[in-house]
Image (cartoon, rainbow, N blue to C red; front, side):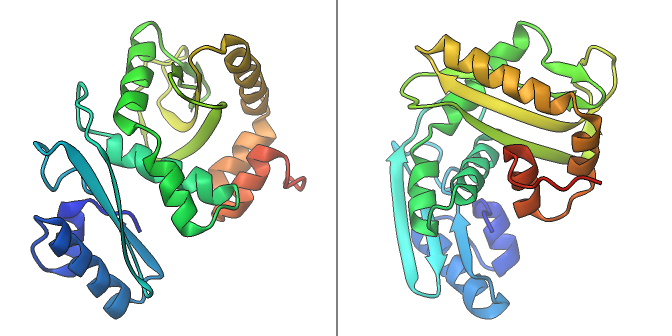
Amino acid sequence: MTPNAGEAAALAERPVTTPAEAGAAGQRLVRDDGLAAVLVKGGHLDPTAGAITDLLITAGGVRAFTHPHVAGPTPRGTGCALATALAIALGRGQGLEDAVETATGIDQTVALAALVQREKLGTTGIGDGLALPHARLPGLAKPLAFFARLARPVDYDALDERPVDLALALVAPEEDSAAQLKALAQLARLLRDPVLTGRLRREADPARVYGLLTGQTAERE
């Protein structure tokens, strides 16, 4: 679970305004609700602070991950980007603490701003309820992709004006446009397969979704 401070407060039924209170709320959720791990995102704790502290709470204790706070055009979406980066790292087989380290090392504000800026140049909604948002980021070692299936489709100014419910986003190294174009072509080929997109809309198991997107799950209905 990856709640922000307000969500952790509501779930744990206690105030969460400081890192210490965030840690205590996470411990209560692990202890009383049987959760294996809780990552309380620190962006809402003190938006004026020079650093953000995310707290990973497990039965083994509390570990803090502190990184600089970078102001962006909007604070919305950065926590979701962190949760997505964490899911990518876990999907690659990293252990939990290593995955959190990887995820918090990606500047979510910069990533979100780059994706939004690219969208202003023209929609990446490619039709049939599909979107392929993408951007290049400084300091990235290699392309990264993440997948989202929306419970409620959103207006995306798509080419066919159909709301989007499946998004496959890509971020690539700023200096390697060839890598971005190659990765975009691969993802576009995936999304052109109606059998695959049908499975992605129905599949409930995240591991199988990952397998479908990476070619590790060959079975298709």
